[in-house]
Length: 135
Image (cartoon, rainbow, N blue to C red; front, side, top):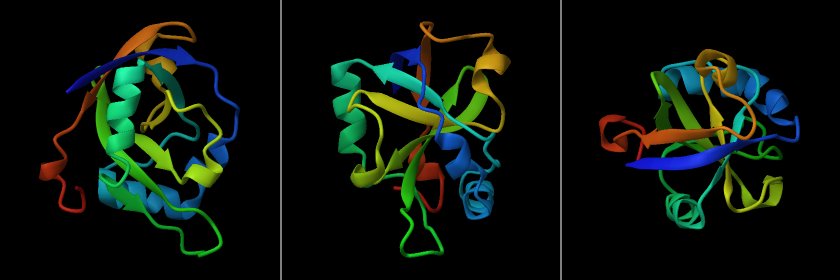
């Protein structure tokens, strides 16, 4: 399934989460890549955002070794030729509106695809059933 959205400016907090050693390690094991520090923020249509919210319990779980720190889920995706994942944080730490998703990838997506804030992109959901720890 393909989702379309517009790249929007983030709040600059994702590089901390994506840079954590346990996040890097679990992404490598569960998603097949270590994420670039930071995320690409994409505003989806209301319909696509509702669809993603329905998938909140799916994907791979990124589990913090510290029970006081939030865990998250990751839905495998591709953006153009790049592998990635939509990060679904716990509701109490989500700093974005309901229509915005954060995407990780092994590279800085904006540079790799030559896109910037305001540009439209397509996100392809990966078939989760092919990932052993997914769905």
